[in-house]
Amino acid sequence: KGALYIVPTPIGNLSDITYRALEVLKNVNMIAAENIRHTNILLQHFNIKNYIVSMNKENEKNKSDNLIEELKQGKIIALVSNAGTPIINDPGNILIKKCHFFNIQVIPLPGACAAITALSASGINKNRFCYEGFLPSKKKIRCDLLHSLKEETRTIIFYETKYRILESIQDIIEQIDQNRHIVIAREITKKWESIYGATATSILEWLKEDKYRYKGEMVVIIDGFKPLKTTFISKKILDTFFILRNSF
Ligand code: SAM
Image (tube, rainbow, N blue to C red; front, side, top):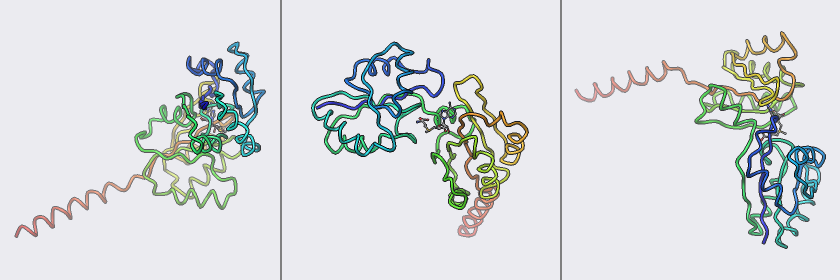
């Protein structure tokens, strides 16, 4: 039987590709790519020639069946998306599920992922986080989701585009908290990289001051809900009171 390699690619700076990723892309029998043209540019940059087939959101159901047949015949295939780690808001999961079903080995390579790279520079608690992908485009559904995250104590990470960032931050102000600390990591690893953090209200003002501040690709990181310290203190006082009372 063959094997499927999951190969992350750079999210901007091409030097972020790993040695192992290059080796795999060079040596596999074929590459299943989200976009052939995009992957061709990457391969050309590194002087790699290999056979690329397209597998995207639209054709993944059918295409994955063809790829499974190839894998069953012993082919080694690399899965790549346009940028970052395949599967993370990118196609590939149907194929991976089928591989597990047919007992075909899936081999993941570590590499670039915008969410994790942004989180690492955010200064926000990194030990417990939840990833929300892109927020829903319909306002009502987006607001409901944000409202349900109001008391989420873990750090919240989501992907956003320049077209909706102002609206989304406004929704965060209304549904979560105007004073919640937010970090926007934009154009990571690229020329105009910027990482900026402030309260939700200040960040909205800051963005509105200059449209270049929300140009390009971005990750939004929201600090988790912090239950009031007084609640903790009053609980401590109450606990002490009960201990004292019970000891008499
Ligand atoms: N698979 C990718 C990953 O591992 O991060 C994510 C693909 S998703 C379709 C694309 C989104 O990722 C963009 O809209 C943006 O929110 C985020 N993104 C990708 N590259 C980025 C970068 N260089 N800087 C900031 N955000 C980025």
